[in-house]
Image (cartoon, rainbow, N blue to C red; front, top):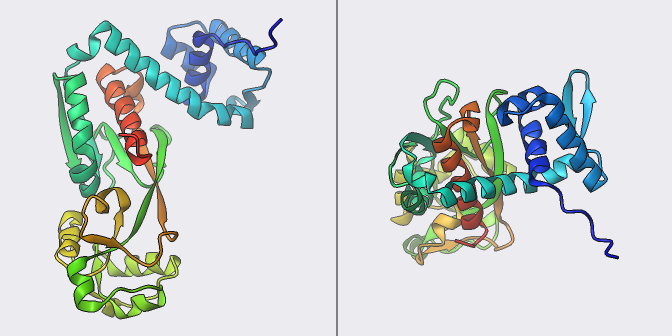
Length: 301
């Protein structure tokens, strides 16, 4: 007789995911169109199948156990896949229409999102997408955008936020710059080089100091608050620039500096409002965008 663990029922997994996302059995039951006792039994059945405790009650709220936290990310991926499968199988994705507004940094909007928009157009050709390329944080709760791509976790409690992936960035310079000023091989060498500023140099100086790069305001000779403009100055050889590896490594004349091991890591978050649970178009874009960013940053386009 096989001792393999029992395969959990998808309905039970879905009940766990809804409860984890909403933080309560009653809200999860409303989301799934179930009675609270039914949903509670499904969560309990999943715990029994897995042999672990997924939630613990703290006051009037439910909190994930360490085992629940560990399973949540995998469950979210299953939920995304199931949603996309259901839409594709039924042909509903072709009929989804309306506008979805995505806000992201100007660099993300220009360099990372185009391929995603092609995939989305193939899946849901009737959707209209408005990309708001802005480096400031737009307010999702006031509906300035429907979905935000951010590099810090959104703090508003009414938003749904998901850490999608950890991205890498490094220090780069154009061949033309290196031919003129030489190639720095240590962090100490960087004191003698020119840097591109992305807006507030005081903020950049502190950020670089935290990375053990000690330069001064005198190292910044040119810059722009517009990320695309600042990056173009780096391409033209005006100075050194920190850039997402995914963007910079597309260009053979941009060289990663110092050492290969000294990469910077930063998070990529997706955030949206509660309408994710009721709007097919927002759910579709959110799930497809999450999948696309994971594939792209992990080298599996």
